[in-house]
Structure formats: structure tokens, C-alpha cells
Amino acid sequence: MKHIILIGFKHVGKSAIGAELAVRIGHKFVDLDEQIQEKFRIKHGTHKPCRKIVLEHGEDFFRDLEREAFQEVVNYQTPCVIALGGGTPLRKENQDLMLNHQVIHVKAPKAIVFERIMLHGKPAFFSDNEDAFTCFQRLWDERIGLYSNLAGIETENSGSINEAVDKIKRELLLAPVV
Image 1 (spheres, rainbow, N blue to C red):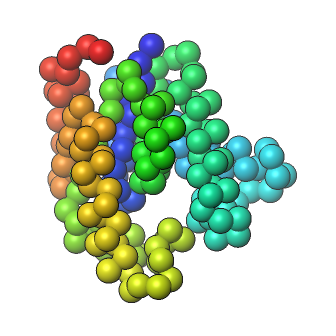
Image 2 (image 1 turned 45 degrees about the horizontal axis):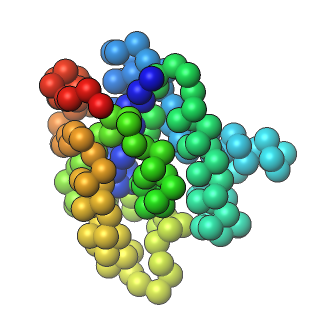
């Protein structure tokens, strides 16, 4: 059993691409952020979006919840397309969970990603000690190499969702079986 796991920076289109890819290949789609929110709801009796969980409980609390949710999803018996949050691959334990699965790095032009992020307001994981663009640039530079190193396939989401999904499907056919 092997999952297809989409990684990449926040707002590169992992969820939109993942949902469409899952439909096209007949897999279940799992958005890890939704799983984290559901896990929080079950444990604490109230719904909170990921941003609010981070703001009210801290990043370490959120990352622990994220790890639990990811572990559960990876253990699903049926192969799934899983869209991870941008920070999920930062923890070594999560990187280990990705082993033996097909990891795809979804990329998009940096300027467009920053614009998409800021449309929703400054994210909870941006530092209060630097301006938004400086923080974004630093995090982008820190993460981009990690995403590339973890992925067996990379795809650019700079056109339509269908174009990105078509490219991923072609790449999956060419990818070596692990």
C-alpha cells in the first residue's frame, strides 16, 4: 500500500491539485489540515481552524496534533492522495512517515504564493519580529530545498489545476516503484 503525498509551501495548490488527482485516479483525498481540525474537535469538543489552534495553543501543540493526524492517515489501508500542510515535512518524524510513499513537491511562482498567502492575512507561523515579506522569504529559502529533497516528483502549479494533475499523472507512470 502506497499513498501519494503532496508537499510544498502554503498556498501552492496542494489541496486543489490533490482533490482533482484523487478523483482522476480513483483514490480517496485527505487534506491533513481538515484531519487536524477534526482531531482537535474530538479531543477538545470544539471546532477551530488550524490558524486559531496555532495562535491559541502554540506551534508545538499544533505540530504534535499534526503528527498524530498524519500518523493516522498514513496507516489507512486504502491508498490515498494526501495534501500536507506546508510545515508538516519540517519534523523528522513526519519525514520518516513519508518513506515508502510517493512524495510530490507542488511548486508555484514565489510572488504568486506570497500574494495568495497575504490575501488571508498574515499567517500564524509568520514571525511577529519581521515584516511579512522578509519572514516569507526566509521561510521559503529554508523550506524549498527540503521539499525538493523529500520529493520523487516535482510539479509546477503555474497554469490550471488540470495541467498540474495531467503532469503528475504522467510522472507517476514514469516513477520507479519503491
